[in-house]
Amino acid sequence: MAVLKTILTVIFILVSIVLTVIVLMQEGKSAGLGTISGAADTYWGKNKGRSREGMLVKITRVLVALFLIIAAVLNIGSF
Image 1: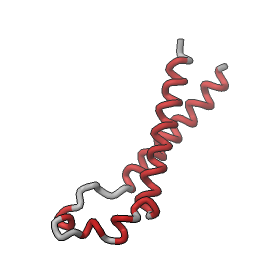
Image 2 (image 1 turned 135 degrees about the horizontal axis):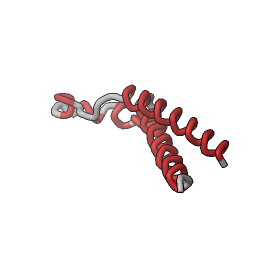
Image 3 (image 1 turned 90 degrees about the vertical axis):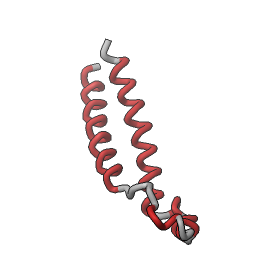
Image 4 (image 1 turned 30 degrees about the vertical axis):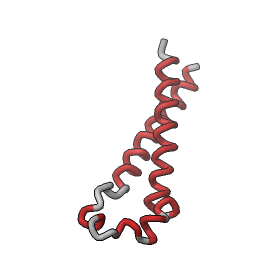
């Protein structure tokens, strides 16, 4: 059981570090003055899910889910 806890702890730390880096790589959500002129309706605004930014958002969601699941498992296993 101790080996499993050690492996989960190492994975938890790695997920935490990668999650921090991914969040810092993302752009800010404020569009600034671009929304006034309608620049949000450009090609990149409509296809954001296929861009690099969209991929970072998807990876962030997966890593957050993994982070929460591993945290819960490590917390339950600490009894």
